[in-house]
Length: 146
Image (tube, rainbow, N blue to C red; front, side, top):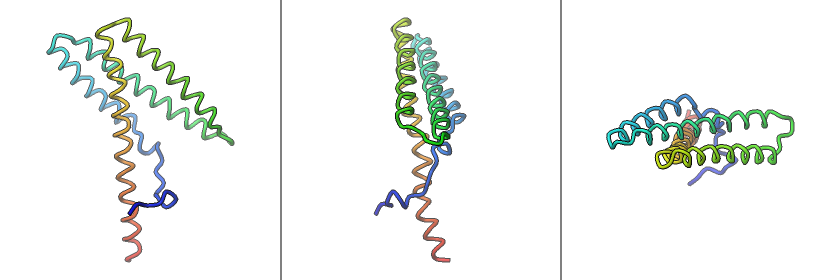
């Protein structure tokens, strides 16, 4: 049986989003990919992969700051959030594709780095939230038995 949305524990994204943890994970991935690419004779692919991870992390931090500033307003507007997100996404895409085009074929590592970052972001954010959701009902049951 699932918990209805209105009864689910409130988990703030700022609690689940940990930029320093993501930075460490990205540094490890960048190092591993660069080492593997160097062993295959293409170390620049690993370097560009690390740049892609860095661009993804920059985007995630900018998203967090944008959400914080827009939701702090008295009347936050969805339109403002959507425009901000679309603009940021366009800029990041243009930067990533420009690097990939100018430094092709090794520059494609930027695109793969940005894509992997999105997977890392979802996993690193979803796992703590899922853990908190699983703990929520158990805490309520324990409190009722005492």
